[in-house]
Image (cartoon, rainbow over all chains, first blue to last red; front, side, top):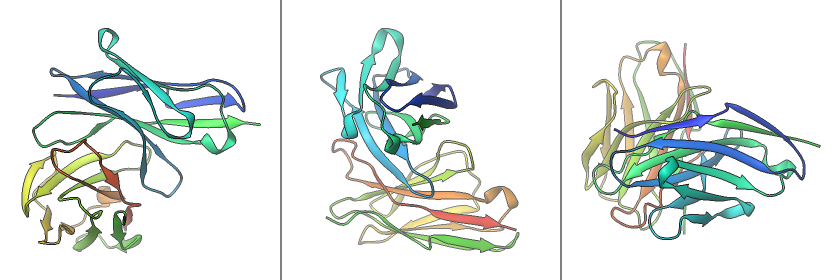
Length: 114
Length: 113
């Protein structure tokens, strides 16, 4: 069974500072990994995903994440935070084949201070 | 390319009632999944439909049921509503075996009183 742990339910950064949101996964088979963002009262928007190939994945809005198999991690980063990045971020895992269900972490709420 | 549309956006029901939520999948997608997101939690997988049949189910009781129609739209039905069913219900569509490109709708906020 797969699981996702997001370290830190709340992260606060200053505008222009580095954003680092942590995600560790557990999977007995090669995982596919995702980061989604959720703004208040909205659905989920895909930021980026890792399926196969290059382990450094670039997404929308300047975000990127690196798949590290040895550390079972898929941390999300952005070099310079913007006020519009304030939202909740979810890491999710699935595996090739099967029912393709996504298993989500509990989320990290990002606050950006002016 | 149309996205995923869910209706209604908000709903208030009384405990014990039944509710139906609707989802129109993105053009070109043939698979629909439903998720429940309780306040302050990550989404939890309810079930998935492919070719009008349930194709995988999470840890939800049988009073949660669904349908997928020939046009790939879907319904989520919940019978005998309980207070703990209050949540945001998210629908996600995808094209099976292609790139794991899940597209989520904006959700239906269900409040059970």
